[in-house]
Each structure stands twice: as structure tokens, then as C-alpha cells.
Length: 261
Image (cartoon, rainbow, N blue to C red; front, side, top):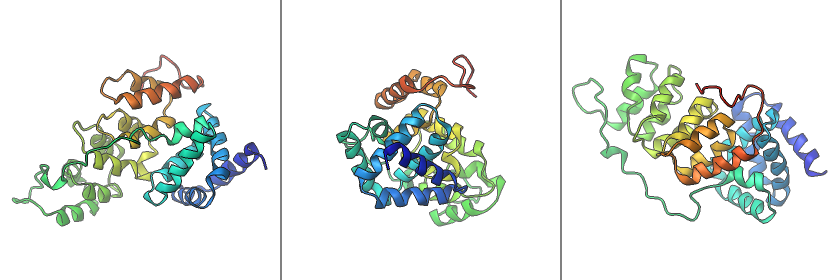
């Protein structure tokens, strides 16, 4: 089976799964179990189609990027990167590029040393107490919880049924922001699939480049231009957006002059 036919089959299989977590599990199995020399040509076709704004391929690319963020397949993803470079699979290389590879990054400061919001209890709350609050469907407490600096609190808050997209956006646009908190949001399939959240993550200069880089492949032309024009975004991310913009065709509903929401 040639790469195009195999890519068609892979895309159909992923799109037949309606649940995002089931799609993620399916793609993870392929990334983990298939040899990179077999999987890379298939993914190159998918990524090339996604760059040309093919809607089915873009759906699958979302699941691929979700899978690439999973720690369990870090080594397998690196092998795919190396295969993409060796075989000149440029679309796959762009999709999986890690702008931080080969560079050392400082670990974030201890979140316990950051200022914790006043939870109105007359005393500082322990981490365990804050994590318990984050699980409760209490809208009145959300304004405080979204300002909590600890990623373990945010992890529990992100699955709270009362949390809204605007709440998450408040956390993502915060400047300065904790990179580990932004990474926690990016790992949430519930929220990373929202276009406003994706765009805000890439535009936040505190978002780790290894998180922001792959997300750029899902941005529309207007969004890519917005990132390129932002002087606060790291140069490596702006350069990647330039590459994507050069290959992204104008499409219906992606008016060059239309304002971004």
C-alpha cells in the first residue's frame, strides 16, 4: 500500500472515532508500536494535506499533536522527528518540530514560592486544600482558583464542569505566566481543541516553545500573521509561523482583512 492510500485509511480510521480521548488512544498506539520508517511516510501525507487546509487531515493532525505531547511516547516521537529529517519529510518535521531541542531551559521556580490568592478563609490554604477546592463545582471560587500558581491545582480545575472557556483564557493570557501552568492547559484535550485557547497559548511569551511550536500548525492564516507580527513571541515560534503561512492557502472564511475575534 502506498503512502497516499495508507494515509487515506489512517484518516478514515481516526475520524470514525467520535470521542477525542479514543482518537488519542488510537493515534498513540500507532506512534508507540509502528516503526518510524512505516509511520513517517503516512504522517507526512497527512501533515502535507493539513498544511493545505484539508479539513479531514487537520482533524487528524489535532489528534497527532495531542499524542506527541504524551510523555509515554517521547522517545517514539523523537524517532519520528529523526526519520522526518532523514527522509526530508518537511511537513511532518514542521508539525513535530521542537524549538527547544539542543537548548537548555531553566526549570520554573517552585510554585510554592509564588503568591497564592486569598481564598477568604482568614489563613493561607495548604496545597491539598486548594486541590480539593478546584474539584468542587463552586463558581464563586473560580475567580480565585484561576489565579492559583500551582500546576497541580490547575490540573484539577481544568476538569471542573463549572470551568468556562473564558476562565481558561484568563489563565492563558496572564503575563507573566507560569510555563508549567500553560503546559498543563496545553495537555488538556478539553481545552487545547478550542481555537481561542490555542491562539492565546502561542501568543503568550511564557508558553514553552516545545508546546507552542506544534500548535502553530493548527493556526489559520490570520492567526499566523498575528503571531508573526507580535514582538513578544520568541523568534523561533515566529519563524515557524512564517513557514506555515507560506504553505497555507487562502480558504473560504479566512479573509485576509477579517478581524480576529
